Image: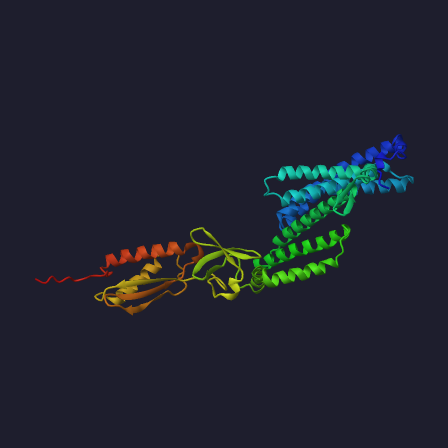
Length: 420
């Protein structure tokens, strides 16, 4: 029966008298119990819910009261029915109201959370509320039957096909409802996956992509039969898509599959410092088509996933974050090389950002025409963030120490002979 229990003329008489007062009293008691239980449950589960994502914590805050009220009022109605052998219409009506409010809260919150970066967020949220309230009113008051009979008389013509206005609106409602369920499922899976602490970033990215694809596929296969589409026709579409991928979309398909390969083999991860095609940067994001690398000047480079499969890639943080800094210091041939090497080691020890537990490399690299090149390699504690600072401090320390000890830093000289 589509009629709302409270608006059913057969039940109005039951609400007048002692039974109605008892039900009103139990309804008020249910509200009080709901408040106490909701506060208690929220305190106990908030910490564990917060660990798996902000979405679930916000959803708990929205639904905990209508959820508890629905359960409490239903239990109260069942107990009253068992005790006095009659149907407590009002209490069951409140239970239905609780379920309706619960549905509204979940749906509106999910859309609001999904569209939180959209500038039309408030307008869309208000529209969703109005649509949901209208649908619930039509369903609970039996107005949908009246509308169906009236709107069914209006026929829309689409070429050789025709469709009644009611069927048209009915299909739109199905599509909107399916989109809402898909958004809710996508957001719920997104929040759950991001809250998992026992898996690494690459596996999270892979699960996020797979879950979104799965939601879309399941949604399409659920909606199309409801709209009267034959799913066997999708086989023809799938063949056409396959031909398109074979010709014009092969690069897109290659990048898409390469993205999954990168996430599965963990060759690069978010936060890795990468050198590819003489471009150096830190990976900040891995998408289905490209990898975002941030350069040291703050610029972001979008490199297709395929490049990380086919081109040589230097991952400086693949197994650990130890990255060395190399310098070449030139000194004159008149310099005391033992003193030079000892001075360089003292300079290295004076920089606190250098990891002193790892032995630095200091040796003669090359004998040039006018200078001797000394190679220096040190290991910063945090090379990703302090490489430039370490290099700068070490250069200053070397120059000052060489000046104090009169160690010559040669520079190109030319002797000019003037012939008379």
